[in-house]
Amino acid sequence: MSVTPLQALPIDRLRRRSSTKWRTYPDDVLPLFVAETDFPLAPAITDRLRTAVELGDTGYTPPDPGIRAAFAAFAQRRFGWHVEAARVRSTCDVMMGVTEILRAIIEPGDRVVVTPPVHPPFFDCVPEAGGVALRVPLDRTGAGWQLDLAGIDAALSGGARVVLLCNPHNPTGTAHSRESLVGLAEIAARHGAYVVSDEIHAPLTHAGAVFTPFLAASDVAARVGVAVTSASKAFNLAGLKCALMVTASDDTSRVVDRLPDEVEWRTGLFGALAGVAAFDEASDPWLDALLAALDDNRRLLAQLLSEHVPDARYELPDAGYLAWVDLSALGWGDNPAVKILRDAKVALHFGPKFGSEGAGHVRFNIGCSPEVLTEAVGRIGALGG
Image (cartoon, rainbow, N blue to C red; front, side, top):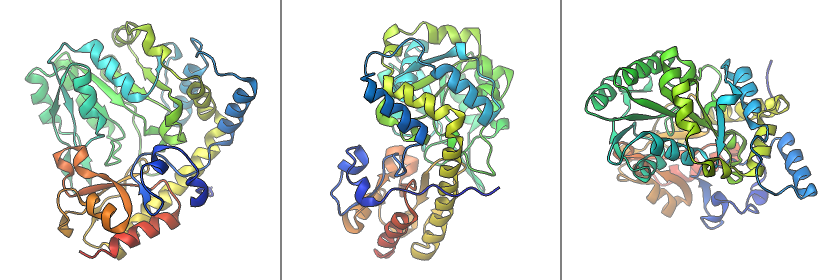
């Protein structure tokens, strides 16, 4: 059964927004950098927030605003993943959750494996938690990217205590295979290490790809892993501040349960209310329509690059609305987004921010209208090689 793609809002309306995407650059710049999307909210979310405002429901977040059960039902419905609601705790956002979990696991100076090119805050949250980031880059294969399990094994053999996983991966959009995740879990268990898995992009896995929750990959993964996720990326709720920390074993549950109460108090009430509405079955048709729009756009980007920037290298992402594009062949330096912003008035995310592996790359946000995406790539193509 075909799904009608969700339509992005008109750009003149989007420019009335006050978020980072629309307030960082002047109006002559097309903003395709930060991970915000241009679509209307899911109706169930709008209705729930409208009711809260009308009631003046702006107080403290209660101990259980319903987000635990809502996520458990969503995970079962969308991923076939059985989550025990009692093993879910909330906090402000994913990176705060990751930081606090790391702080609870490691000692000052311990090494934490990161897998670049990777979400830039990964490089910041590790030292914030007292650790040292140890880079084990993804392997690039003919078909995409995969974890370097041998490199991770060596890092843990050398004393690293945690692997900070991004699944699906940002910026490559890779949904790591179950086989790879099972291997990672066994390596971590052998070394007495943990895996902390950022799974914020999971709801945006495209047709033809499979998202495997780390905790569901194997019994071993359930013992050594903690997942951190949120409705914020798929449903564009980043400003409302609610993320979830999920465990599947007594050992990892104790780690999360020992976190200071303030970690959970940081959950935004509107974030929790919106998250419950997002995870509800009533929002599934909206999410399916969003996925249809993003699928069209990831394929449109490939077509546009072929036409306008033929030397670009791009592989369709398995998940998300972030596209990792290699522009090294154009000779625009290690950070081609600088030239693109200056000369084409298109704001893309700076590749080197994702690690040295990002030299010559840019990250496109394709969570926009086809017209905006077409205009942006056309502007870049007009710069020449």
